[in-house]
Length: 360
Image 1 (spheres, helix red, strand yellow):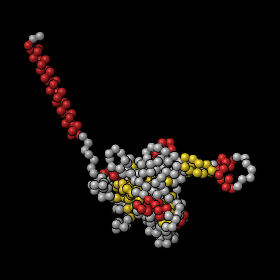
Image 2: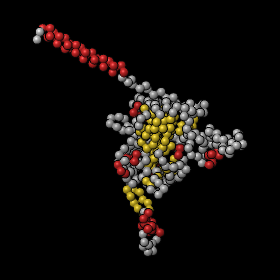
Image 3: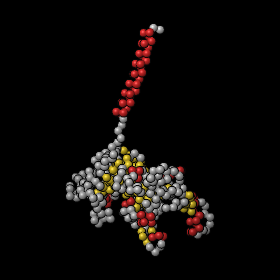
Image 4: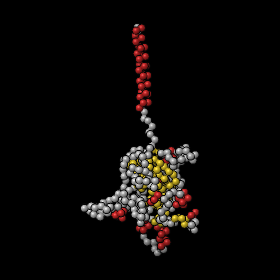
């Protein structure tokens, strides 16, 4: 090969090497320039609050009567009452809460520890998954209290339906008949009694209510879990935790308890027994109203100052969507239709564009 050919070959190698390194450098620069920036810290346009509890609640699955005796649900604290008489330190001499009495509106560890395992959903409420709502840009601050029983019940006793179909076994007393029909089953509850609210997809928010034992801000306090070496944000029976989340995008976000993610019936943990719900993030500016009300509530929101004593010419009622219950009502001052109630710090007494407000 001639000297000119060797020189030309080396020049081509140098050119290819230069192009390779130039291309690689350009790609690195391009990736560096177009890499996604870290999301901005949450900036709450308003703060929506909710007081939520976890409790044991028997619930029915269908019209055929299939039910879960070991059910667990989330519920708003305001919708929960004592399911029996509750005494101080198991002493029959000091009654603290009467059956069906509304539990205190504010968490208190000593009172809540007495109530744990002795509460139920109010009789006018249906057991179902809890739905909390916020708008895009809002923060949701949940004050969560664990009112599960400190000890798993272990067994559930109820009447066996098939016992009624058996032939008569002769003269038996009422007590013997009850014993014959009694059916004892393992309730298959998870042994873990801690509970939490862990939400998928919402950002955690640091705030004054989120501190660890050292007094520093603890972002993971809003995780609602106990993972690895992270601080635990589970709540023991009677204990209260504060979780704060930021709603960045519209959509539905599942939340559930991570106290016992496995175990119990079907190995489904607390979630399988009913401790789950949804945070529904609505478009900005959305206002939320109840989808179902009683006849009494509907009469209370008719605006009698308009139309023909509150009715249109076609006979339909004229609704005052901002109506509140009168002073004579047990829920006086609460909105009848709105799902949000302005808190005392909210001087403007409205919720669509101001804060703070509580989900009721």
